[in-house]
Image 1 (cartoon, rainbow, N blue to C red):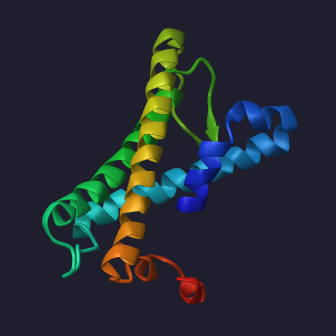
Image 2 (image 1 turned 90 degrees about the horizontal axis):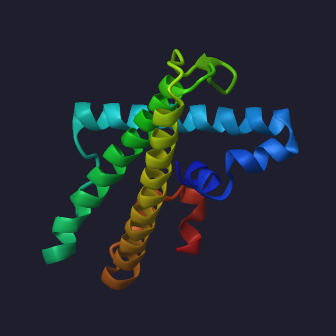
Length: 162
């Protein structure tokens, strides 16, 4: 999820449009994968609750903040997927995710599309800020509390660097 999140922070549709249709299709496929993962993650949360626990070394404000950050990320990414759907619904043309899946039946509502697009952008970049705070929180835990918080989240091949 992190590499895709970074991709959408750094690369905008206008950027890939200048490169050509293959780049636009790739960007759209990345969006489809991102949304599918977001919906799967939200579904897992609804079915099983939070999969992570604060850990014994986390106390006070940090212990209370841990589940709030996780839930904000889960619902925030779901909200980004939802506003992406609303962009498709309010569009004047049929939009396709990855050239594979139609996003929604276009309702030809350009003014609403502008507002939803603005909301989608604000929501995504606000979520990016929260994700950065969340990453900072886990880095703080790993080095300050020495609870190996980062080892839990990264692939085993990267553990030697932590």
